[in-house]
Image 1: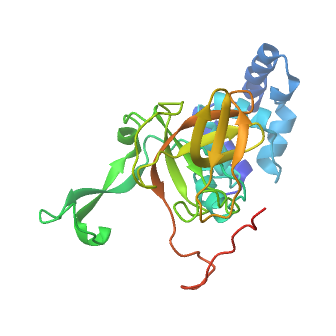
Image 2: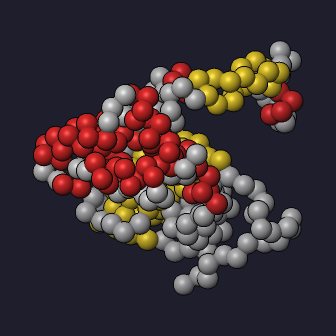
Length: 267
């Protein structure tokens, strides 16, 4: 059905007239002090009978009156918020940035491993498809009960070679919000050295760091070809948190195996 026909069906199921919708939306518009929320009888009739698109204000009013979620009414007009992550992955940005995800709907489910092979050895490298014995549908509402308050996620921009080859451009990183300051810990190898996600005034960067007084030094990987940078802390740079996990592609999708990436020129 056309979008207008679907909206008319929602209204008819509730047993309300276009006149009643007009009166109910007038109350919303008055409360919000914004006439954009108001839907006249004539306008709603036109929407239901012709191919037209309402503004976000009027669509919100309809979601309130029809007892429908705003996201569901967006789908009526072929806008699905669940597609957002897919399009974001298909259009990577050059700059490093924090990643936010659309919250999934509670009644939906995702496929997760619910039973592992009893002979699975945590110390051995294996294919995930071989270590999982049963994949099952897990309700999103269950996942929402997990404590994600202390974690954020970042994306290493395709032009950001600061930590290459330890962290490749295009990688996703998990960031522990605490500690949000540098830790004076001992480390022996580059793999033990803490990596931090830093917010600058106009960008983000993922890097090793050193703090001396009120000066924060960002230290790139020695093979990256990037320069050491210094910023005043906290006026010019702020520590988001420590990187505790990473997911990255080992071979660029558009390149064949053995093709070396282009590194930035040394200053």
